[in-house]
Each structure stands twice: as structure tokens, then as C-alpha cells.
Image 1 (cartoon, rainbow, N blue to C red):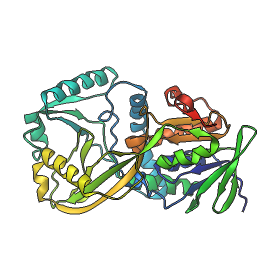
Image 2: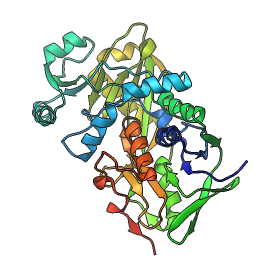
Image 3: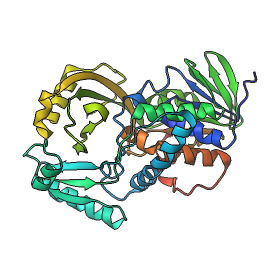
Image 4: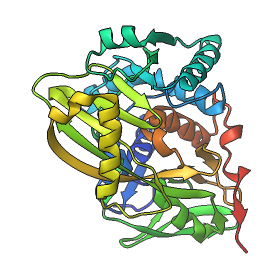
Length: 374
């Protein structure tokens, strides 16, 4: 079998899967390489929130990209189900961004006004209205921004759905194949060097999440990215205690099927340590009890951690390497990798095909913050 491909995707998470799937749909011969198991890093650890409005404070470029990607999920869910048989668990029951102080109320109402002006719907619930909707929430919550369109998916199923749909479309997927270096010549990429030999292609996409930085150093490129550890836990109840995702200061309660609730996530910058700490879980427990006191009655299920890729300015890198033609980068999505996966797959495939993209990618340029190593 030939080791030459139209494109090679490095990374078997949700971003790599979405890119491979989109390239395969357009008829490309695609290879995807993952150094571990598929969906074994942050993509499999995520809570699956589609927080296009709850995560964003203004009407900036990331908000615009996120809202467009969120709108793609109903179609993506259908495609993945048809191609792979996987149900990604898309639920559109909205999200409540809760305020615990007067200052937070004022800030959230300001954000609502900006989002309403941009054409997105956001409504204000008083504390009483909120508890009529979600009786289990704490009396300390003064009100909430209700975002009807911010839904959720099962992150691991979305990731595997993209990957298995890609495989059904002809993508060759290889696990436990680590890329050590790139084959580069005269300002172009020609392939990758791995623990299983050399694979050649004029298009290589680095979508390795927090591990992309180390690999790209081999090209003389220093991305301003860093790993951020996030710890989560889940509990189970006999009856559904929540119907809506609750979001506060980066912490969240996400109701899943079968009475499960996912609670997350801590933020521990600049570490690849994936151990779950007692301190991290205790912080999450306190946050969860503050938002929903009756969660103490739930049964413990499990805890885990994931490593997310963050950038200095909070925007992902989406585009071509500044020095090597054909070498593309898609990383730095931080907490929004699940949300941004559909649109990332489309825009990277457009760039590789040389097609004009409908999105303004200027704010996400790879060379906006990078430093060339000498």
C-alpha cells in the first residue's frame, strides 16, 4: 500500500477528526495519525458544552466563529448518525449563566445587550423565575442569563463520530503512530517522519491539541500556547435534578442522560500532569454545592482530567505555517474545541483546497503571535 496521501492529519481528537472527515467528503486520500488512542486526551474528557454565548463576553471574532459553528450541529448530528451509527447526544435545552452578586447581574445584562444587538437571543431570569425552572438551584443565586441556543453533546461520541465517519469515507486511521518530525524542502512540507516510517504528502495538518507546540518546534516555530489541566467529576441520581446546563465563573453543572451530572472544571495552567488532585475535586465540590445544595445527595461516579491547549490571546490558531507551504495548524481551542470542531473542519479543508472561506480568519492567523526560532 502506498504511503503517499493527499493530506495527513496529525492528531486523533475532535479537531483532527473533523478536519479528516471534511477532507474525505471532498474526495481526498487522507491519513490520520494518533500517537495514543483516539479521543484519549481533552476531546474525550470534555463536558460537551456548546457555549457560544455563555463563554463569550463580547461580539469579537471568536464569538462570530463560535455562533456559526454552533448552528452546524444539527446537520452534523444527522451526518454522523447516518455515516457511523453514532448518536452524538445533541441536546438543545439551553444554558443558564447564573449571577451570585449584583455586580454579576449588571455584567451579564451588559453582555446580553451586546448579544441581542448581534442577533442572538438571551433572556434574563430573576431568582424566582430561575428556581421555578430549576427548583434544585440555590437561593443564593440572584438571577441568570438564559441562553436557549447553547446546547450540549457527548464529547467522546462526537469525536468518535467524526473519526468513524471519516473512516467510512475512506480515511486511513493509525493509532499509536507518533510523528517525530516533518520532511521539509525548499519552503514546502513533503511528509512526516514517524515511529512507523515516513508518510508523504504535500498537505500536513497539525491538530495535536496541547501537544502541537512541541512538534512545531521542529519547524523553527514557537507558538505562544500552553497546556491547561482541567479536572472534572460526575455523579448519578435516581431522578433528574437538572434539565438545563448551569454555568458560573468557568464552573459548570451539565445534566446528562440517566440522571448523570458532570461537574467541572478546574483550571491549572502549564502542566501536562493528568492526575486528578484532591484539592481540585474539593474545589469543584464546593462550587457545585454553592450552586445546587442537593447535589450532596447524589452518588459518586468518577473523576478525570484533560489537558486543553490555550493561547496567549485566547484565540485558536487556524491557518498555514508562515515558512512552509502545505503545513497547516489547527490548535489552541482551549475550552471550545468541541464547539468549534465543525467550523474548524470546514475552514481548514477550504484552505487546503485553495477555496475562499466565508469566515474571516485574519484574527486566527498562525503568525500573529509566533516567534521564529534561530
